[in-house]
Amino acid sequence: MTSTPVEALLAAARRHGADHADAIFIRDESESALIRKGVPEGIERSESVALGLRVFRGKRAATVSTSVLNEAEFDRLAEQACAMALVIPEDQYAGLAESALQGRFDAAGLDLECSASPSMDDLLARAREAEDTALSFKGITNTNGASAGHGRTSVALGTSAGFFGAYSRTAHSTSASVLAGEGGTMQRDYAYRSAVHLEDLESPAIIGREAAERVLARINPGRPRTGTYSVIYDPRVSASLLGHLVGAINGAAIARGTSFLKESLGKQILSAGLTVHDDPRRIRGAASRPFDAEGCAALPLDLIADGVLQTWLLDSRSGRQLGLSTNGRASRGVASPPSPSVTNLHLAAGTLSSEALRSDISEGILITELMGSSVNMLTGDYSRGASGFMIRNGEIAEPVAELTVAGNLKDMFARMIPGSDLMFRQSVNAPSIRIDGMNIAGL
Image (cartoon, rainbow, N blue to C red):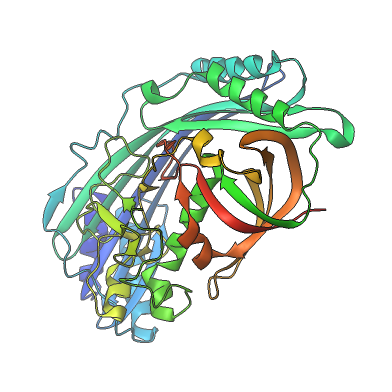
């Protein structure tokens, strides 16, 4: 048998007539523990393996997947994929990435694996400490529980053109969710952290305290008057604006003509001085990787520099559609072909502290939670439910809820002012973001 499942599956594809092929293997292992009111309510261990094969016969491509790892299954899967590829319509943009790496690669230097392997007792203790800390605050009336977990994901990718790469990533997490108030005034909030290395994870006490302080601050919310306000997106929700940006500059959407930014390449879409950077090689990054899902080099990239849109997010197919080369942003699962995506994305921090960012706002709103979504990617029209706090004379004031924040993303991007409070806690990160002239529907 060939040395790895990926290489064995590629060999089977060649035997059954594939002109070219690529294969991906993903193994996920995880353990988690949930504590509620001091009692273990959920102890979970899971392991899954999956293998995907994409074959090309001329300009026809087919993708199949399996969770059975044996030679007979590889042969059956390859035969099925090659037969499917004969009857699927031609795709003139199909094919392996021309700029894929050659040889064997791993994640050396990215520090994506933690040696710590907490026991279930360790996880229960961590969850219990987070919940106990939250419940110790006066005014906390109930709990949804606290959890702790850890896991490992292993990925291997190979192509018939001579690329093979493999790496693993670990993850550790802690969360707590509690309630405050009674009846109709009851409020819920949470805190969550994750890290590649356990030593980088904040203590359970910090997470429990944050959950409690957040929910206590939200008791008895009012509703703002309908009007136009300066709005500040808290870092917990500001990354959602980058999510909309990513969707609007995705090469597949640009090729379909379904983005409100389709004519914006090389144009200023953020204020001068602002940078949006994607870095798949961030040390211990939440989404770091040594290569993309087509075997191309994963390199840092400024999507926006000095406010100007520099590039689309491209895999090889969307690049061919647009007459451009891939920039190593392909991502995929086992059952689907590659598509463009980001890795460790962030909006660079500004110079203003969170206090300075709101200092001249006589009446505005700090948004700390978003609900629902009505975002039209064709026009950029934006409308979301929200809650948070009033800002009065530069200070955070009473809580507010049941409001709707609306605008147009193109205008919102042009007016964004980032704060200095950027922290790298997830794969997409942004500091506080101020946007003036937002429409708020309340009372």
